[in-house]
Image (cartoon, rainbow, N blue to C red; front, side):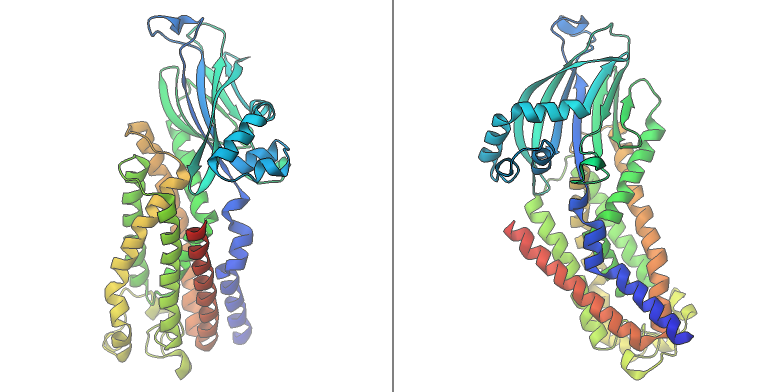
Length: 428
């Protein structure tokens, strides 16, 4: 019975930490975000035509992944396979009617219930997180008095097209004397001004932050590598705190436009951070000072450990164990672990900000969005820790030999995938 239980735990851990499974289930390419900047626009005929008064017309700048947009508009391969900004702009110019038709069928603005007439006024190609985005500028002409409310709706890149799933449209808006942010999804596709939206906005960005960590396989693998290298609850708490503080600082600074680091630098370093931690884990487990024996008085090669689950969950190991030889074996990594994790956390924070796609001047409304997004990240991070660390402890204590080989294979797979990402992102 004990053997079956140990094998089951080992299998579950291998599935959770397997990069192959992560790639299939959590790959970034499985979904997409649309970014929209929606603001009031001077109207040529409305109340805002002279004197800078209120206006009902709307300007919108939409950023959509270039290749996905061209595929969704059902254009030929030469359109969506175009590389380089000049070629992509040429394809957008050639297929402007098809692209415009696709977008305006799925992104709409209404005023007091009446549709506003869209007009494409500009096309560009910009880069977001190493990907080319088509940036489309629209003006929506709206009829009506300036006392009404606007609605903005998005159904871009729906699941039914089968190219991606769970598309979200992240909107920053300034309409009807109201500033804010919103996340439009299939379940909630419409933003209406005049509502008391702050609580809803906080909830939307909380969910968005949680989804980004959960579905971002690189961040999940980094967290798993940190957990594999943790021997006791104290290690987990201090490591998670260092990572959280570091990425929270740079996330807020980058999203507010204070810090700017190119994606071509950030993405390879994120991949390298995973590789470094996984390789350290691999070396320590191979030498028998981590993973199998849990640092509780035994090693994977020496047979069943004398440690217990209670020992692992203590804030500090028993005094006799703390002074044992394992401390000397791990001494260098123990001294450098928190500084290294903190530095890598700073880089991951910039990556989180890039995924959110907000780079704007400080405001209270924006700050609420950023804070709730970050809290969502932390909630999912704590959830992963709460599930994975007890499984690791149980596996190491009940079946140290099995734990050693499962963790060796897991670390090797994580390190190999991370190194592939480093090369791929540098070459990309």
